[in-house]
Image (cartoon, rainbow, N blue to C red):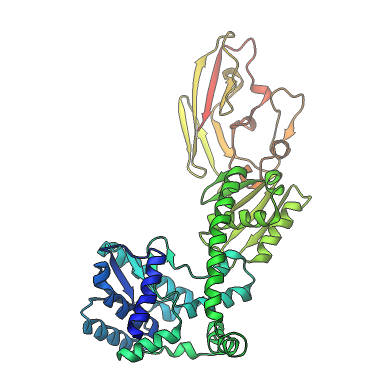
Length: 463
């Protein structure tokens, strides 16, 4: 019987990808379309096999007025028909005001709703109605964009051990046949026939033509191909992460800093993957990042300029800083800071850069060990005047680095030490009057150094 064959196919997919465990609590996302209706009824019929607790869920986008409300009511009636409770949420009207990508915004709202209900119900799985036909459509959409193995892996059967897609190996023809045989109604979304959406043109024109004129088994072959791509990508992703950890100087959600010399020796395919992984770390996803963006970063690495940068979508900036490559959100100019210390001991907190400088005094013995810590400075108490000023660097600042004969621009000092431009405004300078006494964490000025006649010192520590 077709029913048995249909359910067996779905159950094979569930078992193959370990989608369900005995006793799982599952939220089934139901739009009212044929795929989600088939999913709801199929899981209901498999409920006893896995001892599942099931809930239907429907997000009413309110984009088509009464028609949207009628779909919500239809889903409610069908859920009641088989005794499954339905979770419903209506959009607050914000979708109608969306100026960007409406489809993406609507998707994000649905997923936020599903996530909220998952937490409320302590559900282990969220079941979505993506099919083998959706997989084939997605394959061509990504192919048109010119993506690599990750994109051509298309829709994963299981994601984050939460999202499951039991119909991912079932074609839409089988689904429609099951619904008709069992007398299960469904609603067609009129936007699925709109010719202005690329996916709809792929669905209604491209795939039917390929099936008819080239290969009637094309969808099944695409499913196998996407699985190969996904498996390859899992292996390559592990290799990429290992390499990223080897060559990264810093790696967090605000900054990824890579050693260019180590990056350069990697094969170009691995280089591209490391770059994409760095972008994903900062952006959280790879939306709107394409091949040309990655190639522009590879060209940036080759630039003969010690400092250069490029801008990418979502306010991501990539900087070349000497032999380092930095990925970060677009940085605004650091807010200037200015603080004064009229006495010691004193603690100067600099919230603009999330640092602080402690200032104390102590008697000095010439037999004391020489100072070696970079974050600590000792200067002759008799050579300074209060108030001490803590501020960031300004153009034209000069000082005489300890151990040198003449003065030097602070900018040139930063360049000699290869301090990136975006970090220079975050280095505090400690001054007495107009004279720089210490570039915090880097160098004391020659004119305030400790000598054999020093009896008392000012000790400054930056944390």
